[in-house]
Image 1 (cartoon, rainbow, N blue to C red):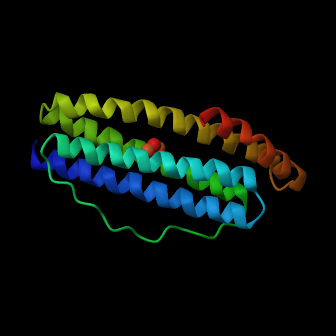
Image 2 (cartoon, protein in one colour):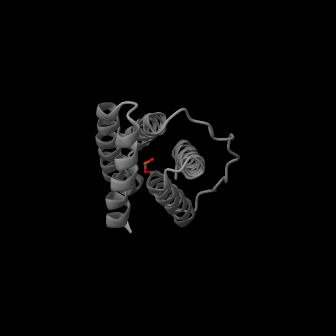
Length: 165
Ligand code: OFO
């Protein structure tokens, strides 16, 4: 594998790991603040990102590349509202999608169709996750600061979490 592609895949390991830790911090904040449904959603999201990271680690090894397990910055742990949690969620997913697209673009430059093919799984995943983040943030924008609306949102988000489990 080209060194540049190996480096990009390792960068992607870091982005997935950072998303996993970010969502863990968000789950914990939600737990602390009484939003148990939102907490469960982000605990699960954090686990999924960890799986995405591991999938990349295994792939790099399969291709006889060198995996570099990254150090991470401390994730943001304080939020003003669940609206801010979901704004952070969407921003994080948009960022990861941009990075996935960048890897794919570079694969084409190096004619690495194997990595290109592998990365298609991430394209599909990002499409789904961005759509989920946009839908949930849209609902929160309708709710605004209404506390009973937040209560119902926290209760209803369980349907998404249970469907994924
Ligand atoms: Fe890894 O799926 Fe989103 O970020």
